[in-house]
Structures are given as structure tokens and as C-alpha cells.
Image (cartoon, rainbow, N blue to C red):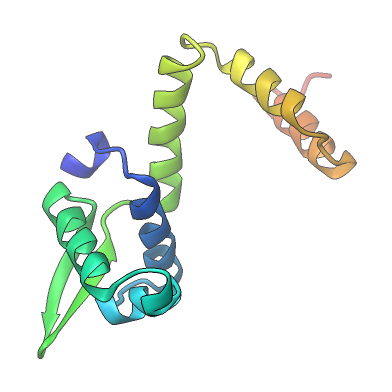
Length: 128
């Protein structure tokens, strides 16, 4: 599928976040969610969503005079694709380097560390 090989731009990711939250939306709804004219022009958003449709990131369905857009992939699939690409290109294929970098850049909460430990235990088959 085409969308699986396309990396969304930052602005496209903002639009995808809205589509994931609301399912099907019009350009007007996306425009309003992004702050309206003061932040983004309507025609700019329209053009971006048309480009996203051409890239295969969204589908477009006509409903009367209105076009409704829907994300092609789920947030989980998109995150996985972007993360795989980042691990490969930035961290030379090393997931451990990515994790250490992320944990080193901020102070994880005790709850986050507990969730990470639980996840690691699951990956190791429950062994501690």
C-alpha cells in the first residue's frame, strides 16, 4: 500500500491527528481545529489534504457538496513506520540506542519506569 512507504510531514501529522480523533472530517473542520485563518489559511489546508490524498495518506469521500477525509492507516501503524525508519536511519538499526537516548533526554516518572520494566519482563517471557 502506498501510504506505508510515505513519511508524513509535520503538518500532515497534525492533520492526521485530527482525522484519527474524529474519524471522517471535512476540510473546514480540520481548518477550524488548526486555529482557523489566523494560524492556517483554508486554501492551504485544502491543498495539503489534496496532496495527502494523492500520496495515499487519506481517502476522500464525496457527501453532497462536501468532501470527507479519513486517514488510511491507524496511529499505531504510522508510529511503527516512523519509529522503524528512525531506528534504521538515526540509530543504525539499534533499538537499544534509541531507548537509551529517549530515557537520557528526560526524567521518566516512576510509573513510566514501572511500565517499561513490565514490558521488558513480558519480552523476556516473564523472567526477572
